[in-house]
Image 1: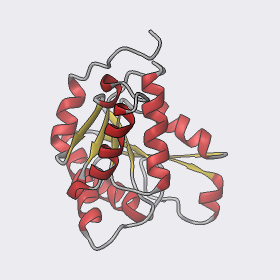
Image 2 (image 1 turned 60 degrees about the vertical axis):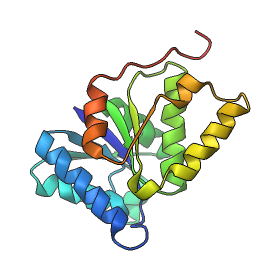
Image 3 (image 1 turned 120 degrees about the vertical axis):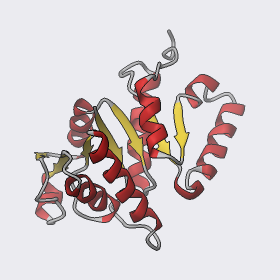
Amino acid sequence: MRVCVFCGSSPGKGTFYRDAAHEVGTLFAERGVELVYGGASVGTMGVLADAVLAGGGAAHGVIPQKLVDREVAHDGLTSLTVVADLHERKAGMSALADAYLVLPGGAGTLEELFEVWTWAQLGLHAKPIALLDVGGFYQPMLRFLENIAAEGFLADDFREMLIVTADVAEALDRFTDYRPPRTKWA
């Protein structure tokens, strides 16, 4: 199984988020789950990839040329695909992945989450998406999504298609028996 992980190019405050990224990478290597991610050496992205590789696992990166030019590409990956822009990056990561795992991160992480979640609602893919709710990081967003649903802009089955857990092992286990809900307008 290959899992695309969206996470931060920053480390976050303290060591909490880096520790979580390291735990995810270690478990991926132990379970033989291949990492697909944005190809950077910085932030929790770099910690995650380093942990996968240190455990003998495979890490596949997809990164735009401009970020390679800024010297943030990870140079020790199993494979690194250099693309023209962020659109190609997301398409490339998605093509390689069987599932998505979203760790805490900033605007880019959220943008990636919302795009693949929208694609799932439209039936463009049937891959599971999990939020790793490290320390309750995603709780404010989940309350916001409840409000969006309450206001009639998000069907409950689409809101519930996001797997939410603080345990990466649980997320991986739930990926194996995931069944997508209906698609929008189906």
